[in-house]
Length: 232
Image 1 (cartoon, one colour):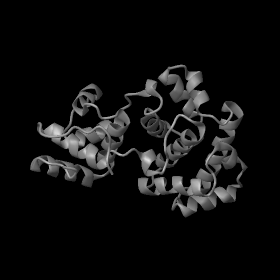
Image 2: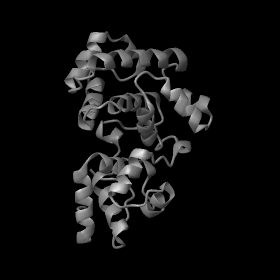
Image 3: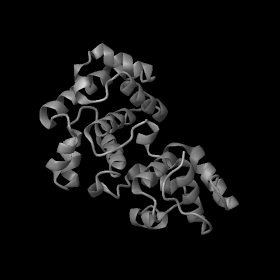
Image 4: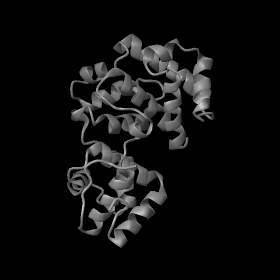
């Protein structure tokens, strides 16, 4: 998995750690879930669903596989999601491996789709427009979506900062936790400066992977000690 905008060549240990991290673990979660994120209703909705799935206490790989399974089942926009039966949603979740929370999540996905249709015409961009650049207001509107708590909102914002510039740079607590594990600066402005031209969404996703997976940390630190990255 490779990210965009990594820094190349030599540098201090922090630069080498970050180079290895972004090179090997910088793909966004939307990309991993098969979402080609654009500022259009369907990919934004699929990213919102992905954020709901990832925010549960379940392996990230299962949540991403389930995001793909829902798409393959045709449940790719609020109208189709709301129009599906509860059992159809349960079955699609099960095919993705999302079995522990499948019944509750099937209900939440249906209710969330209805909310988006009734209040926002099925278009998440209308929430953005209503917030009018106020990030706290946008968070509040997103929290109204069933199953999307504070962690889910952060996941969604980390991803959509690629296409909603007013959200960027968004490095939340989970990303900063990853930075701490890697021995990198824990202040967003210092991390962004260190990352150079790396897109904030790519940097954030890579740091979150370090927070979630010790092997990512070990691998990047090893590469920094050796003074190279896998991509070199």
